[in-house]
Image (cartoon, rainbow, N blue to C red; front, top):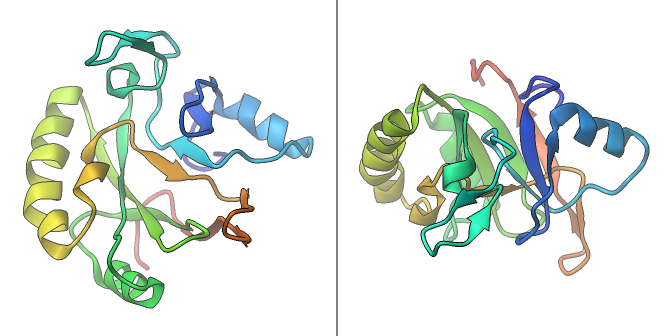
Length: 176
């Protein structure tokens, strides 16, 4: 949170169906005080206001609440962790800014896409990166939306008896 976001940017961290949207600084301060890390976060920044979902319900963290289209989450369901790491090591179609061990079967890759708008996201991420690059290689197609949850490093998954861990971080998405 300290490296990928400016202090005042709004980020969701929480349970799968939670609604806690705070500034990146507020989350950092909370964790620095020893409060536990929740299991999930949304990699893109949010407006902090409620927006309508496709079913008409209001949400502060749905796709329509995203205001910064910087990162895409990608993961595999059918590869072992060593196979996933080998894949991401050789992946060159988008810069990787972080890799997170989910504490389960997946490695989540956070890809730097830096789309200027929702239209650019739809064209570049939903229209090209996922259907033409990632999905044919076996990535989960459900990850293509802008408010996709990823695992937050520092959370202990009691059901798996494992930590969610940050494996790699480079905010520039430079060389691995």
